[in-house]
Length: 209
Image 1: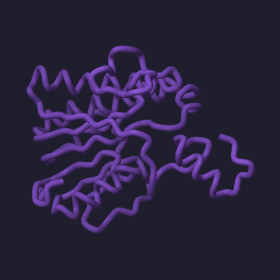
Image 2: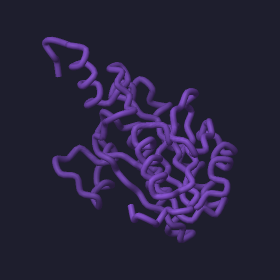
Image 3: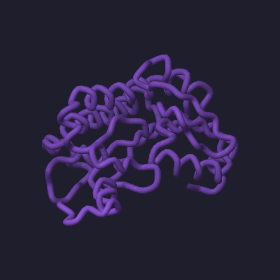
Image 4: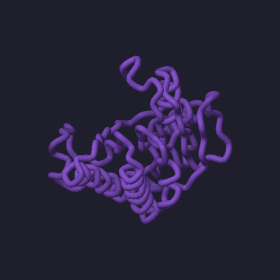
């Protein structure tokens, strides 16, 4: 981030209490931004000065409330979990990832937010050895995570549609296998890397991968 780019700007971090969100909130504060964080968490520990809204961003009115009077939006909110959950809760993963971005992007534009970043996922890529950005749509996503992946893909398409029709300033990131503080370390729901870390720390022996 440029040292003074966000100084005095009103910035919304949707999903601001999660793994990426907490780190981003701290960076934005260091750059002088006025930060609003939104999530479904009931117990949060955010730095002093952060405005916190507890909202369910699956709903349109909640997204309007979140985006009101903001200059920039970082849309990190999503439904995530391990591969097994993606299959057993297929509808929740597909609908959740679609609806959050559908309403958030529409609300951001209606609230005249200047710029919008959508946090997608490495899961949108097909089952290939080398990931290339311009080949995402060449094949379906990996079948092990297809419901969440299609939700993310369609959300990317929505961003492209807003650029094409409205010339609205959106951008997309695709994080790959991130982990760290504030992650989900429950082996029954976590992604692969934090699940393995948790099992190792609990002394699983032998460790079955």
